[in-house]
Image 1: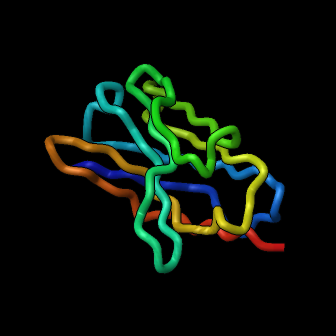
Image 2: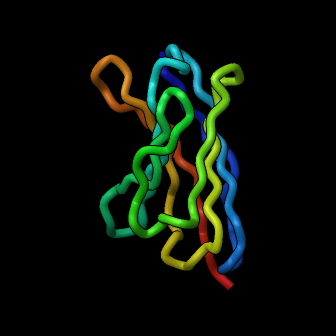
Image 3: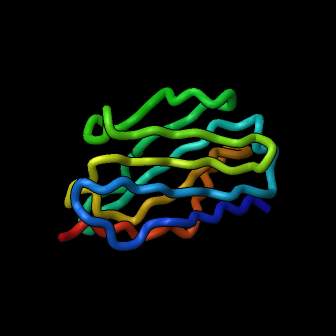
Length: 116
């Protein structure tokens, strides 16, 4: 079955950089676009950034534009995200996601807290 396992996150200082990774299994990774989402307390889950099968970022939230980079390794079946110049409003649970067979799948999420 589809499995997505995020790693990274934790407590970060404002202005620092965040690196998250997602290990995928259970589907043909190289044939699917991947995405990172996040959800802050009391808010809806929102798209952070999406990456195409070929490794091109093609969508991102306005709030992270200019600060976000995303990459993938189709051999290792991983996708990575880096968010620079962290702000307190980046505090959220970050999720790796894929749409497979008509259904969106989510990882368990990883908490990121940005605080001095």
